[in-house]
Image (cartoon, rainbow, N blue to C red; front, top):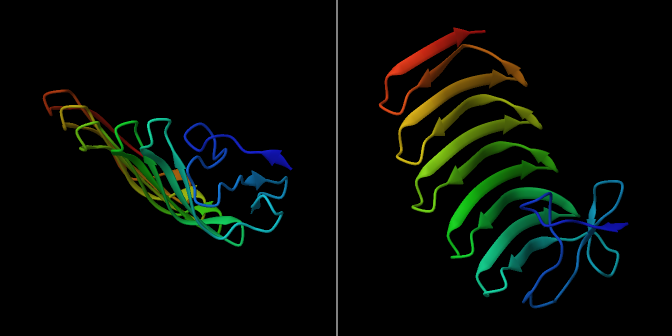
Length: 155
């Protein structure tokens, strides 16, 4: 097994301040194990050096299952990700420092599926895209910083 990397870069390293002080590892089979070599169950948390929450991840039998929350050094929510049985499934959202949505993506069974939206730092919608089972579908749109549509393409 190899120690896994921090989730914001690739996924988890070790828990600082976790009540069990458990380190978790990912094996080549993609299962996350507790430091006693049993599949990890429950919510894994990690903290920034300043003591603010950095990561919350839900595991079931060593597999990511549920919501992953990533926080900035101020303790503000930066990103949410959703997994089901170890696969991307559901809504993924990123936020600005001001807690406005910056992007919203949707997955189903590990593939892009549904509407994807991207806003700029001022809150202006800049892109709207759609996927179905990992493939580009529908009409995609782009807007400029003033909100004027600059182009569209249909798949």
